[in-house]
Image 1 (cartoon, rainbow, N blue to C red):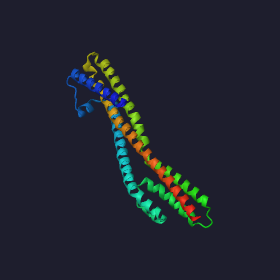
Image 2: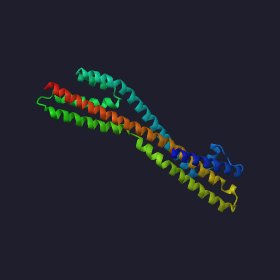
Image 3: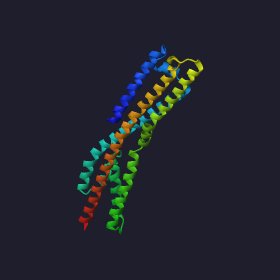
Image 4: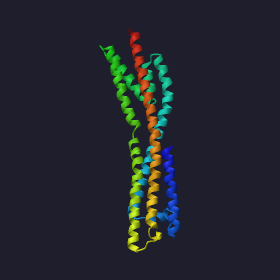
Length: 252
């Protein structure tokens, strides 16, 4: 809430200042194309960098949204099916169910544990306690791998969210420098002499904020979903280990 309030205040001040500059600046262009033509090469470079950052962050958002939605959907179908197969003691069938849901984070973890357990069961002279430990290590390794896959791109999203305002601020500083240079070159002290530089500063600041705010919001949202997936994988691993222990007890 505080961040939203601060952002609203900043954008309102930017809007007021931009209106004041445009009114005082007379015939200065106010449309995006006109502002682009009026910008110096530094401001244009900053805007291009910000657009690249925005495009990359939007790509990450879409990619992660699709991946998480597919993982959630397949996990909902996978969980009851594999539970029924394990309840009947059909480990091979449970593995087949997991392989049909390859986008599910739960299926990846459960498959690793089941395959390790089956491999030790099939090997002659296997130690029962070692079978459980090996399955547990396989589950932990797969959880770490799946966690890394789920977090792919989120680090870049956080970087964009934290650096985009400063990239825009760099454009702001250069715009102000251009404004002072305009005063020195024209020997004028009116606002019309510096209107172009101030407009560059306001545009780059606004674009930097527009790039950063969605990136930060989506990073927090997606990180929350990854944490929820981690909890689900931990719970599934614990339940699977309990199943292995119960199965070993039944054999005794």
